[in-house]
Image (cartoon, rainbow, N blue to C red; front, side, top):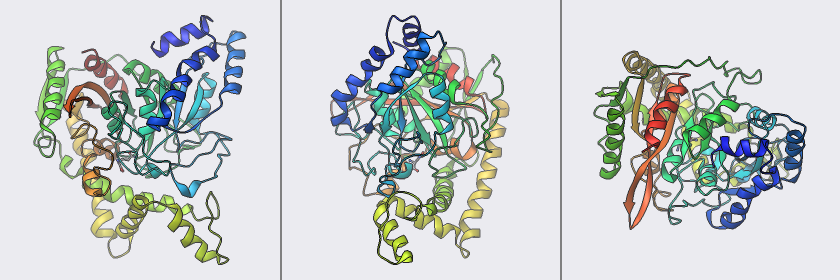
Length: 463
Ligand code: GLN
Protein backbone atom coordinates (compact mmCIF):
# COMPACT_ATOMS: atom_id res chain seq x y z
CA UNK A 1 0.00 0.00 0.00
CA UNK A 2 1.43 3.39 -0.92
CA UNK A 3 1.09 6.35 1.44
CA UNK A 4 -1.55 7.85 -0.86
CA UNK A 5 -3.66 4.67 -0.77
CA UNK A 6 -3.23 4.41 2.99
CA UNK A 7 -4.38 7.98 3.62
CA UNK A 8 -7.43 7.42 1.41
CA UNK A 9 -8.37 4.40 3.50
CA UNK A 10 -8.07 6.41 6.72
CA UNK A 11 -9.99 9.40 5.37
CA UNK A 12 -12.78 7.19 4.01
CA UNK A 13 -12.81 5.31 7.36
CA UNK A 14 -12.22 1.99 5.68
CA UNK A 15 -9.37 1.77 8.19
CA UNK A 16 -9.29 3.36 11.63
CA UNK A 17 -6.14 5.21 12.65
CA UNK A 18 -5.55 2.59 15.31
CA UNK A 19 -5.79 -0.27 12.81
CA UNK A 20 -3.56 1.59 10.40
CA UNK A 21 -0.83 2.25 12.93
CA UNK A 22 -1.03 -1.35 14.15
CA UNK A 23 -0.10 -2.62 10.68
CA UNK A 24 3.36 -1.24 11.34
CA UNK A 25 3.74 -1.32 15.12
CA UNK A 26 3.17 -5.07 15.13
CA UNK A 27 6.21 -5.38 12.87
CA UNK A 28 8.21 -3.18 15.24
CA UNK A 29 7.36 -5.54 18.08
CA UNK A 30 8.31 -8.54 15.99
CA UNK A 31 11.49 -7.28 14.38
CA UNK A 32 13.08 -4.54 16.44
CA UNK A 33 14.86 -6.83 18.90
CA UNK A 34 16.85 -8.27 16.04
CA UNK A 35 17.27 -5.22 13.80
CA UNK A 36 17.71 -2.59 16.55
CA UNK A 37 16.21 0.11 14.33
CA UNK A 38 14.53 1.95 17.19
CA UNK A 39 16.27 3.26 20.29
CA UNK A 40 12.84 3.91 21.77
CA UNK A 41 9.36 2.88 20.67
CA UNK A 42 6.66 5.39 21.61
CA UNK A 43 3.28 4.65 23.09
CA UNK A 44 1.14 6.14 20.32
CA UNK A 45 -2.30 5.95 21.98
CA UNK A 46 -2.74 9.70 22.56
CA UNK A 47 -1.51 10.63 19.10
CA UNK A 48 -3.82 8.01 17.52
CA UNK A 49 -6.80 9.33 19.49
CA UNK A 50 -6.16 12.92 18.50
CA UNK A 51 -5.75 12.17 14.80
CA UNK A 52 -8.88 9.97 14.78
CA UNK A 53 -10.84 12.82 16.36
CA UNK A 54 -9.66 15.21 13.67
CA UNK A 55 -10.58 12.73 10.92
CA UNK A 56 -14.00 12.18 12.51
CA UNK A 57 -14.59 15.93 12.54
CA UNK A 58 -14.07 15.92 8.78
CA UNK A 59 -10.63 17.55 8.73
CA UNK A 60 -8.72 16.64 5.59
CA UNK A 61 -5.28 15.53 6.74
CA UNK A 62 -2.73 14.84 4.00
CA UNK A 63 -0.84 12.38 6.23
CA UNK A 64 -3.78 11.09 8.26
CA UNK A 65 -2.55 8.34 10.58
CA UNK A 66 0.68 7.75 8.68
CA UNK A 67 3.39 6.32 10.94
CA UNK A 68 6.68 8.18 10.76
CA UNK A 69 9.92 6.96 12.39
CA UNK A 70 12.16 9.83 13.54
CA UNK A 71 15.94 9.88 13.73
CA UNK A 72 17.19 10.37 17.26
CA UNK A 73 18.68 13.80 16.49
CA UNK A 74 15.34 15.50 15.71
CA UNK A 75 13.55 16.98 18.71
CA UNK A 76 10.02 15.93 19.67
CA UNK A 77 8.70 17.91 22.62
CA UNK A 78 8.48 15.83 25.79
CA UNK A 79 10.40 12.89 24.33
CA UNK A 80 13.99 11.92 25.02
CA UNK A 81 16.55 12.75 22.35
CA UNK A 82 20.14 11.50 22.47
CA UNK A 83 21.72 11.75 18.98
CA UNK A 84 22.88 8.19 19.68
CA UNK A 85 25.24 9.52 22.37
CA UNK A 86 25.75 8.80 26.02
CA UNK A 87 26.44 12.49 26.63
CA UNK A 88 22.75 13.23 26.07
CA UNK A 89 21.56 10.47 28.38
CA UNK A 90 18.43 11.62 30.17
CA UNK A 91 17.92 14.72 28.01
CA UNK A 92 14.29 15.46 27.13
CA UNK A 93 13.39 17.81 24.28
CA UNK A 94 11.68 21.00 25.38
CA UNK A 95 10.30 21.92 21.96
CA UNK A 96 9.29 20.39 18.63
CA UNK A 97 11.57 20.62 15.61
CA UNK A 98 9.83 22.53 12.81
CA UNK A 99 9.54 19.36 10.69
CA UNK A 100 7.80 17.61 13.60
CA UNK A 101 5.34 20.47 14.03
CA UNK A 102 4.54 20.38 10.31
CA UNK A 103 4.03 16.64 10.21
CA UNK A 104 1.91 16.67 13.35
CA UNK A 105 -0.37 19.25 11.68
CA UNK A 106 -0.60 17.01 8.63
CA UNK A 107 -1.85 14.11 10.79
CA UNK A 108 1.29 11.97 11.07
CA UNK A 109 1.94 9.66 14.04
CA UNK A 110 5.47 9.46 15.45
CA UNK A 111 6.16 5.83 16.32
CA UNK A 112 9.62 6.06 17.83
CA UNK A 113 13.12 7.46 17.66
CA UNK A 114 15.56 5.61 15.49
CA UNK A 115 19.07 4.38 15.96
CA UNK A 116 21.97 6.34 14.47
CA UNK A 117 25.72 6.77 14.57
CA UNK A 118 26.71 8.98 17.47
CA UNK A 119 26.03 12.61 16.49
CA UNK A 120 25.44 11.36 12.91
CA UNK A 121 29.14 10.60 12.48
CA UNK A 122 29.51 7.37 10.59
CA UNK A 123 28.47 5.20 7.67
CA UNK A 124 27.33 2.05 9.43
CA UNK A 125 25.12 2.87 12.47
CA UNK A 126 27.72 1.09 14.58
CA UNK A 127 28.88 3.94 16.81
CA UNK A 128 25.54 4.39 18.58
CA UNK A 129 25.62 3.92 22.36
CA UNK A 130 22.48 1.81 21.79
CA UNK A 131 24.46 -0.78 19.81
CA UNK A 132 24.51 -1.44 16.06
CA UNK A 133 21.44 -1.58 13.85
CA UNK A 134 21.28 -4.45 11.36
CA UNK A 135 20.55 -4.75 7.67
CA UNK A 136 17.25 -6.59 7.06
CA UNK A 137 18.68 -8.18 3.89
CA UNK A 138 21.49 -9.85 5.85
CA UNK A 139 21.65 -9.32 9.59
CA UNK A 140 25.43 -9.92 9.63
CA UNK A 141 25.76 -6.69 7.68
CA UNK A 142 25.43 -3.00 8.52
CA UNK A 143 22.44 -1.01 7.24
CA UNK A 144 24.73 1.91 6.40
CA UNK A 145 24.63 5.17 8.28
CA UNK A 146 24.31 7.41 9.98
CA UNK A 147 20.49 7.32 9.53
CA UNK A 148 20.57 3.49 9.62
CA UNK A 149 17.69 3.14 12.08
CA UNK A 150 15.31 5.29 10.01
CA UNK A 151 16.21 3.41 6.85
CA UNK A 152 15.79 -0.02 8.50
CA UNK A 153 12.43 1.01 9.92
CA UNK A 154 11.18 1.56 6.34
CA UNK A 155 13.03 -1.40 4.77
CA UNK A 156 11.68 -3.68 7.51
CA UNK A 157 8.05 -2.44 7.16
CA UNK A 158 8.08 -0.98 10.66
CA UNK A 159 7.08 2.44 9.31
CA UNK A 160 6.03 3.55 5.82
CA UNK A 161 7.98 6.80 6.16
CA UNK A 162 10.93 8.05 8.17
CA UNK A 163 12.96 11.18 8.75
CA UNK A 164 16.73 11.02 8.55
CA UNK A 165 19.45 13.63 8.40
CA UNK A 166 22.36 14.16 6.03
CA UNK A 167 25.69 15.86 6.38
CA UNK A 168 27.62 13.78 3.87
CA UNK A 169 25.40 10.94 2.67
CA UNK A 170 23.71 9.64 5.78
CA UNK A 171 20.34 9.15 4.08
CA UNK A 172 21.41 8.14 0.57
CA UNK A 173 24.08 5.61 1.53
CA UNK A 174 21.94 3.54 3.94
CA UNK A 175 19.01 3.81 1.50
CA UNK A 176 21.30 2.21 -1.09
CA UNK A 177 22.38 -0.54 1.35
CA UNK A 178 18.80 -1.41 2.32
CA UNK A 179 16.89 -0.97 -0.95
CA UNK A 180 14.68 2.02 -0.14
CA UNK A 181 14.42 5.59 -1.46
CA UNK A 182 16.21 8.41 0.42
CA UNK A 183 16.41 12.10 -0.39
CA UNK A 184 18.94 14.70 0.69
CA UNK A 185 17.10 17.97 -0.03
CA UNK A 186 18.65 21.22 -1.27
CA UNK A 187 20.43 23.07 1.55
CA UNK A 188 17.85 25.47 2.96
CA UNK A 189 14.82 23.63 1.56
CA UNK A 190 13.95 22.09 4.93
CA UNK A 191 14.24 23.86 8.28
CA UNK A 192 17.00 22.61 10.57
CA UNK A 193 15.35 24.09 13.65
CA UNK A 194 15.29 21.31 16.24
CA UNK A 195 17.91 19.17 14.49
CA UNK A 196 20.95 18.49 16.70
CA UNK A 197 23.74 20.02 14.63
CA UNK A 198 26.75 18.19 13.28
CA UNK A 199 28.13 20.53 10.58
CA UNK A 200 25.62 23.32 10.15
CA UNK A 201 26.58 24.36 6.61
CA UNK A 202 26.08 20.80 5.35
CA UNK A 203 23.25 19.39 7.52
CA UNK A 204 19.76 18.79 6.12
CA UNK A 205 16.78 16.74 7.32
CA UNK A 206 15.41 14.46 4.61
CA UNK A 207 12.65 11.94 3.88
CA UNK A 208 12.87 8.14 3.51
CA UNK A 209 10.23 5.87 1.94
CA UNK A 210 9.64 2.74 -0.10
CA UNK A 211 8.90 4.57 -3.34
CA UNK A 212 9.85 7.87 -4.96
CA UNK A 213 6.21 8.97 -4.73
CA UNK A 214 6.13 8.37 -0.96
CA UNK A 215 9.36 10.33 -0.48
CA UNK A 216 7.98 13.17 -2.58
CA UNK A 217 4.86 13.32 -0.38
CA UNK A 218 6.89 13.50 2.82
CA UNK A 219 9.21 16.12 1.31
CA UNK A 220 6.22 18.28 0.31
CA UNK A 221 5.13 18.39 3.93
CA UNK A 222 8.46 19.32 5.51
CA UNK A 223 9.89 21.84 3.04
CA UNK A 224 9.63 25.62 3.15
CA UNK A 225 10.88 28.73 4.89
CA UNK A 226 10.94 28.83 8.65
CA UNK A 227 11.47 32.00 10.67
CA UNK A 228 13.42 29.97 13.23
CA UNK A 229 16.08 28.92 10.69
CA UNK A 230 17.64 31.85 8.87
CA UNK A 231 19.25 29.53 6.32
CA UNK A 232 15.89 28.14 5.21
CA UNK A 233 14.28 29.49 2.06
CA UNK A 234 10.86 29.76 0.53
CA UNK A 235 10.57 26.76 -1.78
CA UNK A 236 10.08 28.05 -5.34
CA UNK A 237 7.04 26.88 -7.22
CA UNK A 238 7.98 23.93 -9.41
CA UNK A 239 7.02 23.85 -13.03
CA UNK A 240 6.80 20.85 -15.31
CA UNK A 241 10.23 20.62 -16.93
CA UNK A 242 11.72 18.88 -19.86
CA UNK A 243 14.74 16.96 -18.62
CA UNK A 244 16.88 15.87 -21.56
CA UNK A 245 20.58 15.83 -20.87
CA UNK A 246 22.27 13.92 -18.10
CA UNK A 247 25.95 13.83 -17.14
CA UNK A 248 27.99 11.24 -15.29
CA UNK A 249 31.52 11.89 -14.03
CA UNK A 250 34.54 11.11 -16.12
CA UNK A 251 37.61 9.55 -14.57
CA UNK A 252 36.19 9.35 -11.07
CA UNK A 253 34.08 6.23 -10.87
CA UNK A 254 36.46 3.38 -11.57
CA UNK A 255 38.78 3.57 -8.58
CA UNK A 256 37.96 1.64 -5.44
CA UNK A 257 34.48 0.61 -6.52
CA UNK A 258 33.34 -3.03 -6.64
CA UNK A 259 33.11 -4.21 -10.26
CA UNK A 260 29.53 -5.43 -10.05
CA UNK A 261 28.42 -2.21 -8.33
CA UNK A 262 29.85 -0.22 -11.24
CA UNK A 263 28.17 -2.56 -13.77
CA UNK A 264 24.93 -2.08 -11.92
CA UNK A 265 25.34 1.70 -12.28
CA UNK A 266 25.91 1.38 -16.03
CA UNK A 267 22.71 -0.67 -16.26
CA UNK A 268 20.89 2.27 -14.71
CA UNK A 269 22.37 4.52 -17.37
CA UNK A 270 21.10 2.14 -20.07
CA UNK A 271 17.61 2.43 -18.62
CA UNK A 272 17.77 6.22 -18.90
CA UNK A 273 19.10 6.04 -22.45
CA UNK A 274 16.24 3.74 -23.45
CA UNK A 275 13.86 6.28 -21.99
CA UNK A 276 15.26 8.76 -24.49
CA UNK A 277 17.65 10.78 -22.32
CA UNK A 278 21.04 11.84 -23.63
CA UNK A 279 23.58 10.58 -21.11
CA UNK A 280 27.19 11.70 -21.47
CA UNK A 281 30.46 11.26 -19.62
CA UNK A 282 31.65 14.66 -18.39
CA UNK A 283 34.55 16.02 -16.39
CA UNK A 284 33.22 17.46 -13.13
CA UNK A 285 35.74 19.93 -11.68
CA UNK A 286 37.16 19.21 -8.23
CA UNK A 287 35.02 16.11 -7.71
CA UNK A 288 38.22 14.21 -6.89
CA UNK A 289 38.77 16.55 -3.95
CA UNK A 290 35.31 16.20 -2.45
CA UNK A 291 36.14 13.64 0.23
CA UNK A 292 39.25 15.51 1.40
CA UNK A 293 37.29 18.77 1.61
CA UNK A 294 34.51 17.10 3.51
CA UNK A 295 36.82 15.63 6.13
CA UNK A 296 38.24 19.09 6.84
CA UNK A 297 35.11 21.25 6.72
CA UNK A 298 32.81 18.81 8.52
CA UNK A 299 35.03 18.20 11.61
CA UNK A 300 35.80 21.94 11.84
CA UNK A 301 32.11 22.75 12.15
CA UNK A 302 31.34 19.68 14.26
CA UNK A 303 34.04 20.53 16.81
CA UNK A 304 32.50 23.99 17.27
CA UNK A 305 28.93 22.68 17.45
CA UNK A 306 29.81 20.03 20.00
CA UNK A 307 31.40 22.54 22.38
CA UNK A 308 27.98 23.07 23.94
CA UNK A 309 27.96 19.60 25.47
CA UNK A 310 29.77 20.55 28.64
CA UNK A 311 27.97 18.67 31.38
CA UNK A 312 26.22 21.85 32.49
CA UNK A 313 23.47 22.42 29.98
CA UNK A 314 22.35 19.02 28.76
CA UNK A 315 22.32 15.36 29.73
CA UNK A 316 25.26 13.63 31.38
CA UNK A 317 27.21 15.32 34.17
CA UNK A 318 30.19 13.86 35.95
CA UNK A 319 30.36 15.66 39.25
CA UNK A 320 33.92 15.80 40.55
CA UNK A 321 33.49 18.81 42.80
CA UNK A 322 35.65 20.91 40.48
CA UNK A 323 33.75 22.58 37.65
CA UNK A 324 36.64 22.62 35.17
CA UNK A 325 37.40 18.99 35.85
CA UNK A 326 33.67 18.19 35.41
CA UNK A 327 33.90 19.45 31.84
CA UNK A 328 36.78 17.12 30.94
CA UNK A 329 35.35 14.11 32.75
CA UNK A 330 31.89 14.54 31.24
CA UNK A 331 33.16 14.93 27.68
CA UNK A 332 35.69 12.12 28.12
CA UNK A 333 33.02 9.72 29.26
CA UNK A 334 30.08 10.96 27.24
CA UNK A 335 31.60 11.11 23.76
CA UNK A 336 32.59 7.96 21.89
CA UNK A 337 35.83 7.40 20.00
CA UNK A 338 34.72 8.63 16.57
CA UNK A 339 33.25 11.83 17.99
CA UNK A 340 36.44 12.56 19.93
CA UNK A 341 38.50 11.88 16.80
CA UNK A 342 36.48 14.45 14.84
CA UNK A 343 36.63 17.06 17.61
CA UNK A 344 40.42 16.72 17.59
CA UNK A 345 40.61 16.90 13.79
CA UNK A 346 38.29 19.90 13.74
CA UNK A 347 40.12 21.89 16.39
CA UNK A 348 43.40 21.06 14.65
CA UNK A 349 42.34 22.41 11.24
CA UNK A 350 40.92 25.54 12.90
CA UNK A 351 43.92 26.23 15.12
CA UNK A 352 45.85 29.40 14.36
CA UNK A 353 48.90 27.70 12.85
CA UNK A 354 46.89 25.46 10.53
CA UNK A 355 43.78 27.44 9.67
CA UNK A 356 45.19 28.83 6.41
CA UNK A 357 46.80 25.56 5.38
CA UNK A 358 43.73 23.41 5.94
CA UNK A 359 40.42 25.07 6.67
CA UNK A 360 40.78 28.15 4.48
CA UNK A 361 42.20 26.15 1.62
CA UNK A 362 39.37 23.63 1.82
CA UNK A 363 36.85 26.46 1.94
CA UNK A 364 38.34 28.03 -1.22
CA UNK A 365 38.33 24.73 -3.10
CA UNK A 366 34.73 24.18 -1.99
CA UNK A 367 33.81 27.49 -3.61
CA UNK A 368 35.56 26.46 -6.83
CA UNK A 369 33.77 23.13 -6.77
CA UNK A 370 30.41 24.86 -6.46
CA UNK A 371 31.22 26.92 -9.52
CA UNK A 372 32.29 23.78 -11.36
CA UNK A 373 28.94 22.13 -10.67
CA UNK A 374 27.12 25.26 -11.82
CA UNK A 375 29.00 25.10 -15.10
CA UNK A 376 28.03 21.47 -15.62
CA UNK A 377 24.40 22.28 -14.83
CA UNK A 378 24.40 24.94 -17.55
CA UNK A 379 24.62 22.14 -20.10
CA UNK A 380 23.11 19.21 -18.23
CA UNK A 381 19.84 18.88 -16.34
CA UNK A 382 21.10 16.29 -13.87
CA UNK A 383 24.19 14.32 -12.83
CA UNK A 384 24.08 10.62 -12.01
CA UNK A 385 26.54 8.55 -9.96
CA UNK A 386 26.68 5.40 -7.88
CA UNK A 387 25.70 5.99 -4.23
CA UNK A 388 28.49 4.01 -2.59
CA UNK A 389 31.43 1.96 -3.86
CA UNK A 390 30.19 -1.27 -2.26
CA UNK A 391 26.99 -2.95 -1.11
CA UNK A 392 26.41 -3.30 2.66
CA UNK A 393 29.56 -4.51 4.43
CA UNK A 394 29.85 -6.80 7.44
CA UNK A 395 29.29 -5.46 10.95
CA UNK A 396 32.73 -4.67 12.40
CA UNK A 397 34.48 -4.91 9.01
CA UNK A 398 35.46 -1.24 8.89
CA UNK A 399 34.91 -0.04 12.43
CA UNK A 400 38.60 -0.13 13.31
CA UNK A 401 39.70 1.55 10.11
CA UNK A 402 38.27 5.07 9.94
CA UNK A 403 39.80 5.81 6.54
CA UNK A 404 38.09 2.79 4.97
CA UNK A 405 34.85 3.91 6.58
CA UNK A 406 35.26 7.46 5.24
CA UNK A 407 35.71 6.08 1.71
CA UNK A 408 32.07 4.89 1.72
CA UNK A 409 31.15 8.59 1.41
CA UNK A 410 33.13 9.26 -1.75
CA UNK A 411 30.12 9.59 -4.06
CA UNK A 412 27.76 11.33 -1.64
CA UNK A 413 29.65 14.19 0.03
CA UNK A 414 29.80 16.43 -3.05
CA UNK A 415 26.03 17.10 -2.94
CA UNK A 416 26.36 18.38 0.65
CA UNK A 417 29.42 20.49 -0.13
CA UNK A 418 27.68 22.07 -3.12
CA UNK A 419 24.28 22.31 -1.37
CA UNK A 420 22.36 20.57 -4.15
CA UNK A 421 19.71 17.85 -3.77
CA UNK A 422 20.46 14.16 -4.26
CA UNK A 423 18.37 11.01 -4.21
CA UNK A 424 19.16 7.31 -3.91
CA UNK A 425 16.76 4.99 -5.71
CA UNK A 426 16.93 1.16 -5.57
CA UNK A 427 18.56 -0.23 -8.70
CA UNK A 428 18.73 -4.01 -8.40
CA UNK A 429 21.09 -6.12 -6.33
CA UNK A 430 24.54 -7.67 -6.29
CA UNK A 431 25.36 -11.03 -4.72
CA UNK A 432 27.62 -11.52 -1.71
CA UNK A 433 28.00 -14.93 -0.04
CA UNK A 434 24.76 -16.21 -1.54
CA UNK A 435 22.72 -13.17 -0.52
CA UNK A 436 21.23 -10.55 -2.81
CA UNK A 437 22.18 -7.11 -1.50
CA UNK A 438 20.49 -3.94 -2.76
CA UNK A 439 22.40 -1.21 -4.59
CA UNK A 440 21.14 2.31 -5.18
CA UNK A 441 21.38 4.71 -8.11
CA UNK A 442 22.15 8.34 -7.31
CA UNK A 443 20.73 11.38 -9.09
CA UNK A 444 21.81 14.99 -8.42
CA UNK A 445 20.16 18.17 -9.68
CA UNK A 446 20.64 21.94 -9.31
CA UNK A 447 19.40 23.75 -6.19
CA UNK A 448 15.63 23.46 -5.64
CA UNK A 449 15.19 21.07 -8.58
CA UNK A 450 14.03 18.10 -6.51
CA UNK A 451 11.30 17.63 -9.13
CA UNK A 452 13.95 16.38 -11.59
CA UNK A 453 15.13 13.81 -9.06
CA UNK A 454 11.59 12.55 -8.62
CA UNK A 455 10.93 12.36 -12.36
CA UNK A 456 14.17 10.48 -13.12
CA UNK A 457 13.93 8.37 -9.96
CA UNK A 458 10.55 7.07 -11.07
CA UNK A 459 12.08 5.86 -14.34
CA UNK A 460 14.78 3.94 -12.50
CA UNK A 461 12.52 2.40 -9.88
CA UNK A 462 10.03 1.13 -12.45
CA UNK A 463 12.49 -1.43 -13.73
N1 GLN B 1 29.20 9.07 6.68
C1 GLN B 1 29.44 10.47 6.72
C2 GLN B 1 30.21 10.82 7.96
O1 GLN B 1 30.59 9.94 8.65
C3 GLN B 1 28.17 11.22 6.60
C4 GLN B 1 27.49 11.51 7.88
C5 GLN B 1 26.20 12.20 7.71
O2 GLN B 1 25.75 12.46 6.59
N2 GLN B 1 25.59 12.59 8.81
O3 GLN B 1 30.48 11.94 8.26
